[in-house]
Length: 139
Image (cartoon, rainbow, N blue to C red; front, side, top):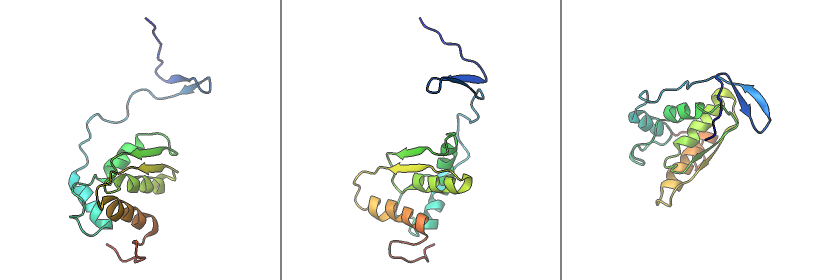
């Protein structure tokens, strides 16, 4: 049986063949109970006025919390169940807050109008400040 010694404050990076300083332990909790699904609904209605378009969108702050667990501000975030586009909005806002250059890939099933009317429309409004008709007076 092979064993490997793991040091508390350093690790060996096999790519660079260098020893790097690191902090041991997890800085995040195992249970996330600071975010509520009602916040996701409020986040959604700030961009798209009809709260009945999408049931139970994730809160943006929850997704940003998960994104900030990654110590790479150039990461590519993949969301296989994009739905309302919360992950895309969270990545864009995280980049604005800390100057990161994260990118996102959103995948959706062909669920009728959801990708075109909700996901794409939400992200257009977040990125440009205008809706798909060019109006800037959305909520």
